[in-house]
Length: 248
Image 1 (cartoon, helix red, strand yellow):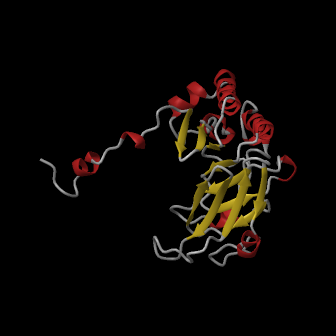
Image 2 (image 1 turned 90 degrees about the horizontal axis):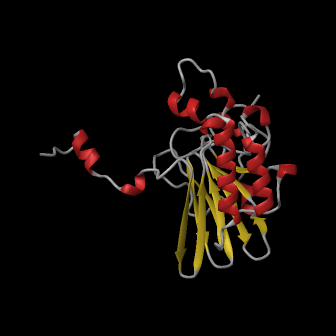
Image 3 (image 1 turned 45 degrees about the horizontal axis):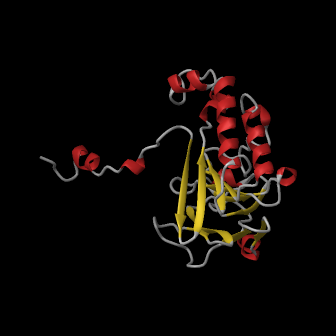
């Protein structure tokens, strides 16, 4: 017997799509003549600050058994193969930690990572030009400005504002757009010609959308491999943390 509100009831709402098939995997989608490849890769074993933590911050067994050069090389090779073999209209990468953004930037700070994984991933992105790199971790909505690390096409998107606010995560300088740490989400629209990322900010009430219009729109052209950042991104970028605090 299953009682409403019980643990059994919650567990009965299962779906195989809620479970990771592997630590590193690829998903290919096709619809109405548009194909998309999503590349997911593991980053936890490369976080230098996790090494030697006592007690361990996360799964110690997984970290200690995978935080090594052999696995690092295998993950980088996996990402390169997934990028190199993609025939999709649009290819993007998904992982947890930001390569570029407004808080810790693992793509810009090699000492924060292990086994040179993050600089190698950045090099692959610059070589193969996926349309976007999506990450969470920082509780904020950000379109990063990678500066000299940019290939002129790939958008670095932090979309980690689905729960707890991260006002202090706003304060880094390397941003094209940021919502200041309020809640939010992105919507992606893929056509045969373009890949468009739209940022939305939610209001103080859970689920409340501040405005029906996107606060920042980024459009990438699949043929020319060029990306255009909308004027709305600059116009709507927060000038300070959304809670009124200071970055100093």
